[in-house]
Image (cartoon, rainbow, N blue to C red; front, side, top):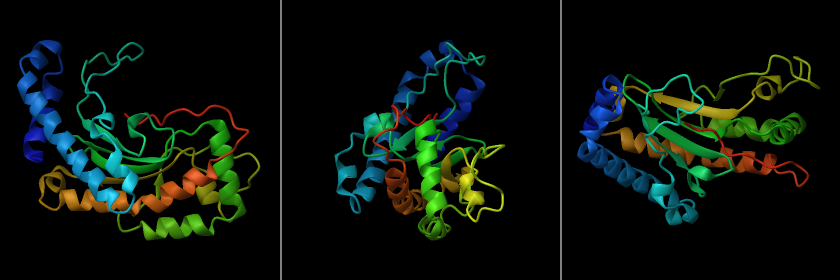
Length: 230
């Protein structure tokens, strides 16, 4: 993937985010999407060395559309200024914990993994598992520290019912989503080492996805929704 070409297109798009300009850039956009799809294919094949099921995933079903859904948004610009994909055995419509990465100029590229905005039932299940024994999860996060040094990040509950701040796992229980992220600068994205760093980060996420997938299971829970990666 020519990351310089991809970031330049996205940078231009952020300055000319209208349908008239985009209509003149069809060939250029198709080039970007094709390169990105080939890159996602490489990522999936790399993961297939560890989890063969990833080798059966259609990369086209992992990539998000660049068109924005503006029906219920105050932001009426028609296009996203990033290109992104979910890394999951179920593609972008998965209901399971998964990986995600996006490329966006201005230092907004990142890779993430975990369980994003779980249903109330799933959140309860995961918190109960953490409260019962946080040791395994802490060991997994420690093993991921090279690639996701900050552990879980994101929104936290203001009040946590059933748990007091002196609970030994309160620092984990407080999260509303269980997601670890790693940011990349533009310079890192265009470097020759980027592909290897991204693939290594996504491989490192697999134990976390396994733990979360097991923890969220509850035969009595209500219907689950897909993670809202954008």
